[in-house]
Image (tube, rainbow, N blue to C red; front, side, top):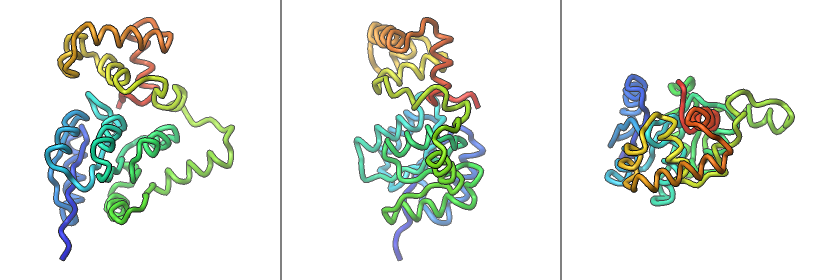
Length: 221
């Protein structure tokens, strides 16, 4: 009998994470459950799972940037995004990063186990609701995508480190706290923040926060 796949779950809502764990336990071996993107990076490094089930809206490091770092270091790991965000800009960015599956939380009970089975076979899984949105967008590209798309595609103009700093600023962290989290000097954080503001033509922390929310780097949920 084949061994169960080793899975890590990353979601900052405890009740949601518990529900996912109960759903997966008959089919998988849960080797980690974490509540932020930086804890996810460490758990993946320590546990070397077959699959990571990752929410986009993770504190400290959002799920898409965490996935990008994981796949760069360990390209053999499969990542399934499990999120409330069905907007096309999030879906496009997720597959640009290299994830293997994209499941909406409202469909978790019927689709997550199926998604894990598919990605373990080397296939891609996309929630039918998400796939329909992509088809509709392809058929009618002029149609608006909704308010979550107005900021563009996941801060594409910024570097990975700039997005990290921007997210932490938007989450209300001080320069000193950000320096400690990223293990860099305060001057380095100040430099990045200044460059971000110049690049985005923004002038206040409030404007940076609004931009970060619009681009999916932080969540207001």
